Length: 125
Image (cartoon, one colour):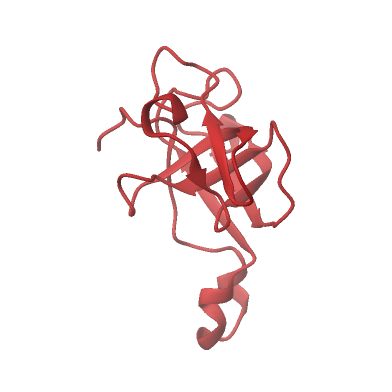
């Protein structure tokens, strides 16, 4: 897996999906993710789990899971930086030595992003 694009997260299993009717699966309100690189260290560690929810309330500094702007099937987790317009924000990596962020790919549409609400300790994974 290519890890040069920042804290990559992998998931498609929604925690909500496990308890709802199959026709409603695409409307999941919660998803789990796993960090697969080091671009968000020390905040997030490789192998650490995340639980994220849908939220339309955006604030600078929030951890958000978004689709990579250059690779649509590739999820990344970054911190919201400066707001560019209504839905586009600059994304920042906590560890700028190992990951890419908006300095490399520009502002990103975060309207379909996931807000990280729980960071699962690595020892529980």
